[in-house]
Image (cartoon, rainbow, N blue to C red; front, top):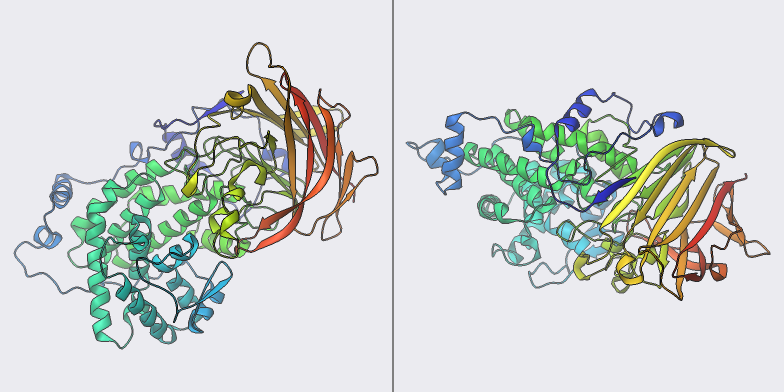
Length: 623
């Protein structure tokens, strides 16, 4: 059984580059036939480690460029390096960027009508507090301060019609954030994304009639780039550092005398990408929204290279190709993403738009070591299974205790889901429940004594809990399961507190009509402790699924919104547990627009022996 460890070591990235080079070119979102979905797994090579991209693709430079990079890093101004005997050029944006990324037209239309539309909530621009002391929901701050709304505005109207709106918001923002480095707007991640957005959408930002505002905006662009020059190298590894260096590179490409800044930024960016991404292309935060943002950002940055007529480092294209397959693995039959690590079910059109803009055509990644999400597709049924530890505290964005949770869908219909939406709390999702949406009970997995498998801390961080996950994946053929795929995984999150490890076995039949599950509590010592402990197996149901419990309270009928029927049944063996009950409880599910929907969950509860227990269950499609 392979073991996933939360360790930060360096990997052999050569295999990844070879995999990208040899990967078959397929239509967008194409998946192989069920029989080819999960071949026997090769022996893992120390998974869950950080990809050192610079081991394979370094920023090529001769002695001259190396000296330029060193001089800029020491603080010599770019114009003094690039043109030491000439007067500095006037500050301007040197080229027009044509990015294939597109924004949300509905959000752009709302902007023209005088509102921000963020996670389904309308916020009037006229009364919005742009001051550094204002407290907004994290999702609101992200959209407003990153100027991500510029893409939405550009998608909703011709440039001439949107320029006045962009001028108005930019003027209000500059008035509130004239002091560099103060307030949430100056988080390096938001500052880097903002700088890229300003430069990509420069014609919209600078195309108005207010010449004084144009001068202020150009000065803000230059000041932000200079601030990031100093701040980016000090930022912790992750999307924040990558975004900061991306802003530096974009400024180096599109502002005068930018070559020294570009060379400095490229070296930092390649290193930062290597520190952010695992060996299989999944970001170490394990957050699908961060994965999506990274792909979109690289597409914008490569468009900046094209506008400046400069060849980008090969590392950027390779990294973008590595990032796409893991993201595709988390799409359900409806095209939207699963609810993992605090995100809602990011909508299919948003995912498709980012993938299409990237130009990457590949198949979903079925077996992901560091990314940690196993994928099985059989017939129209698709299973996603979390078989890795949660992200380390330094990588976590909205960290969740979701180990050994799963999601299940049949075509476009979701059967078993996770609640999701913790990162969207403060919008339509009440802020008071955000912490609860990160808990183990908000995921479709086993909970012991109503405790989290990994401690859920404030501000999206995680504490002690799951450190290792052992898993094994194989094809099996046995009575009742022809050409089935079986995944066996176990975590140690409850070992220290309760002396038990949780092992879960999921077996999906080759035709996708049956999912058999087994949850096992195994004592970690030679002999288990005495007494009993409360447990709950939770299966959160998809939106619109109607539940009818069987008369014997050992099963349930699940009627999907499109008329498909699945049956749930408990196994006959109680596994040494007492007072096992099956009942339905209220739950909720958060969609990609941040809207919570009332749903239900099936809950198996009882008292398990501290010496161990075993509980089997089964989902079967009957109509």
